[in-house]
Image (cartoon, rainbow over all chains, first blue to last red; front, side):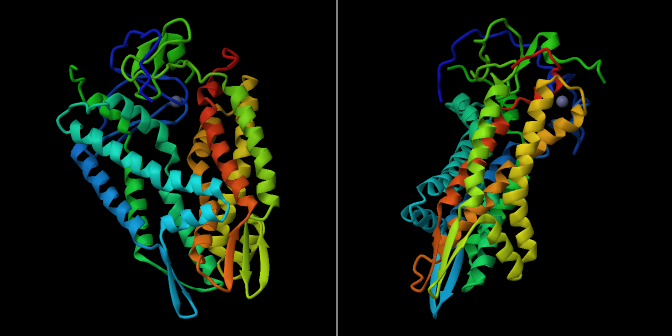
Length: 213
Length: 207
Ligand SMILES: [Zn+2]
């Protein structure tokens, strides 16, 4: 991911502009009031939002997400009652099971979108935010920010919460199923992700200053 | 509304990775001076690539629905479920609300995505000025709902694991779920490959 930049580097335009990513319209930047969202007049896409969370707030949110994530993965998601026997399943139990049941493709997709990408995303965010508190760019800032942008759409923890809910109901047709703390930890994670989704982490580029190497 | 300036007219180009606004240069090998990503005026060969991915996704979508995604064995009763039969079962056995959710995620969303992306591709390729604002919104909807279709894949994964020690009851994933998972992933890539700015470009840009 850390390709050395090749090719022509164009001049930077005055940093007073916004370009709508969805229709290429150019706007003059302006300060936004609390809670205000600037929308594109041409295509109605969101140009920018007022930042209600500062860097410390974002860091706190990421740490909370990490704690919830650990709990969601350690604690079983559901327990199954079968002839008086209790069976519990964790996320990794499900993934290894899919692998053994000859659905390696699904196991890989699930492992990436539910485990590796979320972990990567949270750790990378933690890393850059830690330095951004002093308005500094973390070592490897550029590569990390590009990577964060790329893995963005591939983290699916919130879809998993709904999937788990459906699975519990379906399994209920055959057995006794009880939701376990793991699923509640996932619920909390889902809330944090929703809260975070309105934050454009690309603003860290503007909030931090280049540290001379 | 037509007098709003566009970056391509002003000789500006925005980096989609870090949002830096740069002055446009001739040639294709410009990189963002801030983040080092390649700068594209428009995503490269957006039409061709999106069409190819969309067709590939559709080719996976057919077996994903025809082939069973899951086998349940209960007291010697073997029951192979397709996506649709699973939804019907969920409906009949007392969870109509969840049946609707699964139906929306697994059937409606993928079908809607095929239609929406084809519509966007065809209308933009023709340089159509029809309902541009609505088409922009449609694109953002496609991007937003894309990954919720993974729902059924996770359901099968969880159910499989739930009964891993079940001695008389068993749940097994079947090939349909693999095709379905691939359909979701490929349509997600297809919607990322489409460049929404093409909706507003008219006939000025070919790719
Ligand atoms: Zn716009």
